[in-house]
Length: 454
Image (cartoon, rainbow, N blue to C red; front, side, top):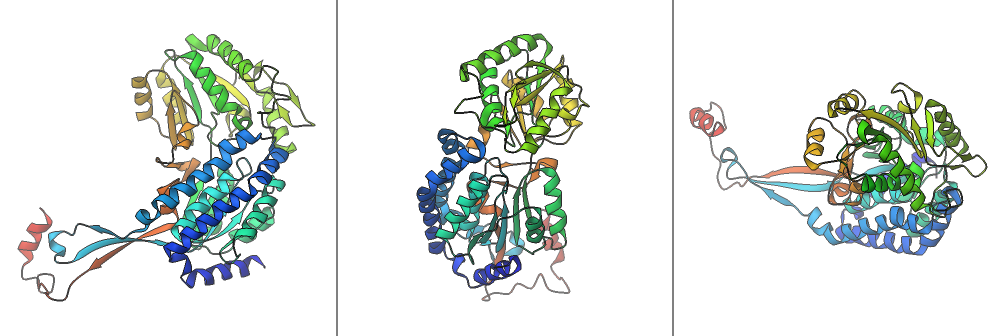
């Protein structure tokens, strides 16, 4: 089926009204969970083949998160979807006010390669729960994972409801040329602009989950052992190929040397035999990405790591010192296990540096709580952690999303349901009484004005 025919088929299927029924949505969520159980092993094997991602990391950062989203949706869907009654002002009496949450319709979900399972299927949970149809576009950079996902979806759902489309940029261009009721895109800011421009002619609502250079500040009062351990973990997770990975280090001058020493110690504790043959260390996704990262090594002085293997695309976790803020490694999101180091004396330097650049997807601060809240009050980001990294994404009760260059819209749990829904306001007015004050010639204007000013 061609892309335009697929979009038309999904639009027609949505129009028949089946997906609006809660029973249908719940059944689809159960089907998705059953499909995930059936295809879990092939998905994990494909993640190992494409990314060298271990089963444990695959389950914790991909499969398990999707199970959690499905369970949460099944548990709360009745509550999320119910009609809500709201207060009506005196001027609106005796009417009643409601909000109903209705599905947007035919949607497109485009996912990246770094977390190819959860970043495709978690938004799908929201689409199903809200009552939408969905066309799924996985990344061509992880062909084995994308192939398994296509088989899984085809096995569970009819393509008029949920379908997978594979391909490269030409296919993306064809997809983006179609009209949807929502596009949910996860990827780079550059591609986000392409999506936004293509859909602007339709005024399509968008959820853009992008990225950026997320700063990681370690202040002089930080617990260096804990800070180094958590930062090493966050940078090594998926080999730094995470949209909310700490991108660069901002170290207080007084603790710089001590932190670097502790960083090396914690890295050795995680990988006593090194990362090259480590089961739990992901490799770089492609030769293009590997070469881009290799080019960054000349932008500073290597004080830890720096070894690589082009054949297996292994890239050792690396600390880069004496980095210029204007160097290439400080311009774009690194998306790999390289840590440029900047230093500061006063927190105001950090505030000025961060606010002078694009708004990041995440912001990490290690130090005293009071100082953390102070610096957070003077900066902005999609999300943030105090004395931790990455973990804010693990709490589905709080929204996840970007701001400005790092994205728009948010999702997870009820936010995913709302992302694919329209909140429709309804006023219901009885006919047993018809108050005259709203009609011309506004004989009760003084009373109405007084009521409006109350």
